Amino acid sequence: MKILTSPFPVAVDSVKPRHSSKADPYASEAQTSALLRRGAEYRFHRINASDMITTGEAVLLSGISRVTFNAWLKSGRCIGVKHLRSCIKVPKWQFEPYVFPVLQAVSEALATTDGWQMLSFLETPHVALGGLAPRIALEQGVMRQRIVELAAAQGH
View 1 (cartoon, rainbow, N blue to C red):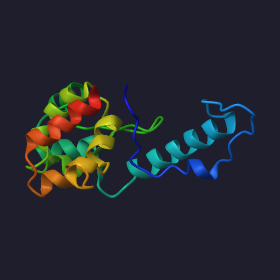
View 2 (tube, helix red, strand yellow):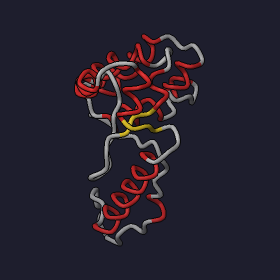
View 3 (spheres, rainbow, N blue to C red):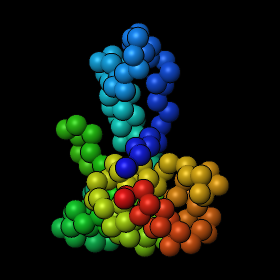
């Protein structure tokens, strides 16, 4: 069973549960709407954060062609995220030498090329890393294989 984690605090407690005599395992319509709204707000703010750059800027930074960069995005070698109809943005930090070499392996371990899933995994603190996010752990010298193992555990 795959447990979904969130890279942002979701105030589920702030949404009042339905009153029922039986325990209902399903969220109410109001709870679902609140979670979807907060998720959309998070994505909007995250895609507009200062560490996010356009694909054009990423092509210049990486020194490769746009065609190659798009192939990297599709294969999971790079992280690219999109919000609604906006352009694709990429986190600039993924081109750091401690992150870039591990991205393809993380993508394969998570069994996804979805940028939001990869971004969430790399930015969410993990108990097995002493509360560090995998990206920060890589920056601090944690072995790449450890990060890939955690991704595989989450991906299955």
